[in-house]
Length: 165
Image 1 (tube, helix red, strand yellow):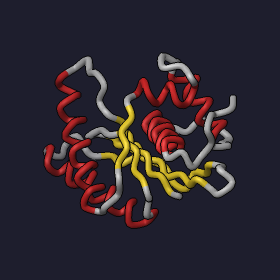
Image 2 (cartoon, helix red, strand yellow; image 1 turned 30 degrees about the vertical axis):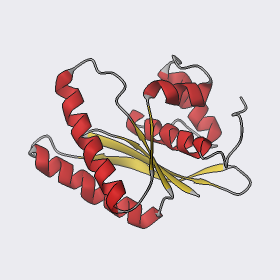
Image 3 (tube, one colour; image 1 turned 120 degrees about the vertical axis):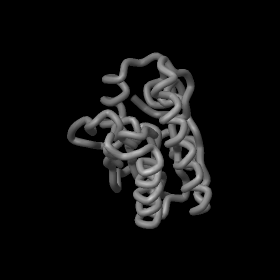
């Protein structure tokens, strides 16, 4: 099973495609960022996110897409563009008939580490371990997207019942 995790943003949208193998192991297939230029108008940025995400969906054929949902925001100026990007991502998934699961940052931390208020570094170390990576994925948007994908894999209940430390 292929799960595509997405950390939405208008400047940078992180993505991580993982495979849930029959032996319940997780493997990274692809990860990176969709970056848009600050020189682009909002519509052009959203169009680029749509086009690149469509390409990723066609390339990897995920059975599930997991996306970070806005739980709270400190700055309305950044919350609105992120919401616009999320809307485009949801529309792209719907057009490609990929079911979507949503996770708040708190849920991601809780699922990955067992503690909803875990520090980002601890979450990243656990992601590295769960995916058998040599180093923590960079930038943070990629690590976040991979964590979201892991949550999608675990939520399917095909994976393991509990993450072992």
